[in-house]
Image (cartoon, rainbow, N blue to C red; front, side):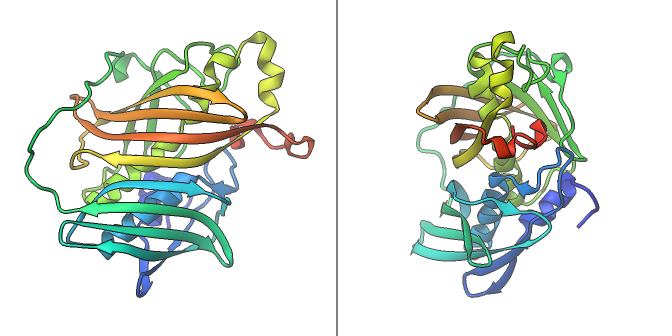
Length: 288
């Protein structure tokens, strides 16, 4: 594992190893630049995608739905156990349990199939937003990761008030050639801006203190892959929060290539709670 967080290291984390019938093991990687001591939930999602792809090598991953129940500790290992619900000639489904020791951290239901020629075909157009050259560079989360925000300078600033929408251009180095690793990487970054999208209308000078005492967590992510996940340069992640209330948020999004191809769609549910007094000592970037 390379020292420090990096896209290259993240791909190694995704590439879990077989450890027996329907069992895989993987590492969790080091802390990122934000000081977070637990892995993002979408890291387990990426590992489950790769494990299922290795279990069904004659098929391609089409969708995955993850529910995150406990945090994954970093600088450790994880175990992935597959329960094959169905394996046919055209489709296969596995429920992947991701755990550390006796702790179940996530369950991921993954659908795989054998692609066939189009019967009908259409897709949502890429949003007409500023290009990467006109977007605002964001703080680098890891080596080989470049994020640029459209019409927003800092997603965590109380001054960034607007509709519950966020658009972000992402560039990664390296871009994996393997389909399963490319899908795992694309899925991983769906978890980066969902909560920020929900919080955007609720910021402002008067809410700065309240925002500083909010605790958030990603509870579930569903992603569907529409095409072979291949790209050359930038990806556009589009986010829209369509509902927030009763301590929960709901976000839907899409991932387009720079030339307009729709690679994936995703939805997320997040938890939003008042932060316990015990936790307010945690640096804000590590808990937002």
